[in-house]
Amino acid sequence: MHGKEQVIAPILQQELGIQVTVPTAFDTDYFGTFTGEIERAGTQIEAARFKAQRGLERMNESLGLASEGSFGPHPSSGFIASNLEIVLLLDTRHDLEVFGMALSTNTNHSHRVVRNLKEAKDFAVQVGFPQHGLIVSADPKSSNQGLLFKGIVSEVALNEAIQTVLAQSSTAFLQTDMRAMYNPTRMKVIAEATQNLAAKLRSYCPNCGWPGFEIAKRKIGLPCEWCMSPTELVLAEVYECKKCKHQIEKKHPDGKEFADPGRCMYCNP
Ligand SMILES: [Zn+2]
Ligand SMILES: [Zn+2]
Image 1: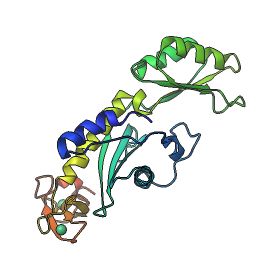
Image 2: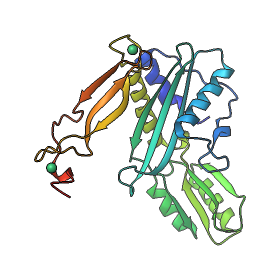
Image 3: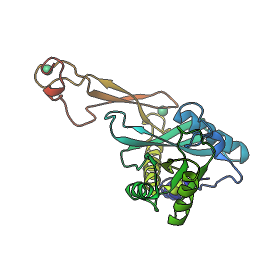
């Protein structure tokens, strides 16, 4: 419903020869909306898997594809907004599930309470309007609920929405519309996640040749350069085959054999 196939389909066609078709009359908003009218069930991966499964039920195919995004504080530096995108592929014939991921701090995800048109326009400029869409509604804290204008991409529509809401209450609530077709910045992150999916599918098990040979866990304990004590940094990445469970341990994934003493709990407590 949100035009994500525009970025996903060309990449999968080129990288893997997969032809993507979108099921008709498939209401993906049923699985959750960003504006909270419908809550998403489960984790992001579970939501993507569920969508891929429901899509497959409607089409006589064995490869299902779905994407799911989320927005929030960056996991390691909590003050920066970030966007996590997942593109998941289900192969029912081979009982294979692989998902690509992309985490980006390049997002306009934001909201603001405004009192007049001028404040609304200032916010709009900051978040890349009109290339990026906006949502206008009544202030969530006000008693005046019910008004909701989504997918605003023109000055005229923005004026109208703001004036309608402000006619009923003293403030209006503006937020960025994060649905992919209204958000080219998000589209780029979805493209990155798709590239990641293609790369994982092209990573084959050295033992049995099964696709999707990827990192299953990370071992911490990279030794400190001064005292050789294990640190919290990654020492090795363990790849595992989804089919035969063959494992390969790749040491020093960041190309460093030792950790900076600044990251050591003994040398830099
Ligand atoms: Zn294998
Ligand atoms: Zn040390």
